[in-house]
Image (tube, rainbow, N blue to C red; front, side, top):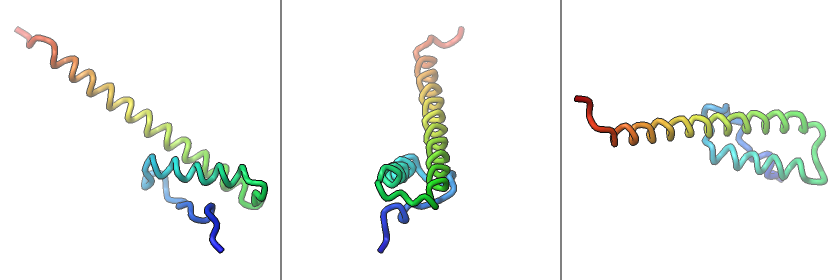
Length: 83
């Protein structure tokens, strides 16, 4: 019998997307919230969750920087051309 926790994809962080990371975090959270937490896997699951959280924070930070750049470019486009 395969449980949902075994279906997580312990891919390297560079290969997993933001949505997939959030989905995997949700699976880990439900696993850790359950009454039948596998103590032997607990440390590994917490470490994986920490990696995924770091990945998500990094992706959000990168997106914020890109958005700021686009807004700055738009603001610059409104300025009159130099004489």
